[in-house]
Image (cartoon, rainbow, N blue to C red; front, side):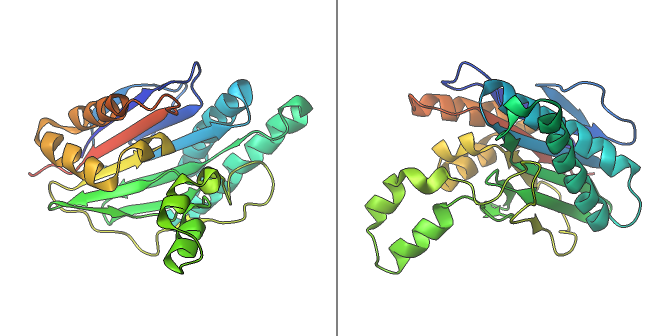
Length: 260
């Protein structure tokens, strides 16, 4: 597998996203805004912080660092190790708030993914999407824990217009996040998802939602042959080209399964 991680501040003056990719054993001592390489097995984690510049950045970086280290130290099958790493990342955020009560209210989303011999397994909390691009189609693999799906259900039931649903400012409100308290909603893979040659997996922060799924698919298919770094760079360029004056931070971790 080939991988790359890229990030952009967008229209913000600060960065609350964090992402790390670990290829094989060994802990990472510091976050890397841009990583790339290849490996037979990968563990990747992405977090999107909230709670103000300082708090959001601390939450996302703490969660990524602790998650990777905890996953590496845990025992058992991949699913149980992912669950334990998630809980320890959440506990680490609680410890930060205990040490500095001024940080109360900080938190983050999190997607942790393991690419191993059996395929892809993940755990996620929040609205950071995990996509699979395969044979000209795009699939959202994890649940969206924002209010957007609930608002769309109201529109589908005829209780509000689709125009109002898409413009509703509550769409981005989170129903679940890592805040140090009990986690309300957790999405987990039920079994390993077998990956195929030329599959591209994208782990993104919600800044990517500036693009439609069709746009994400088009850009990924156009650049996939050039490698995951080209895909990630092109997706960030497409977000920037959309010209949203309120554009959020956007981070993309791109993983491509190579042909032997």
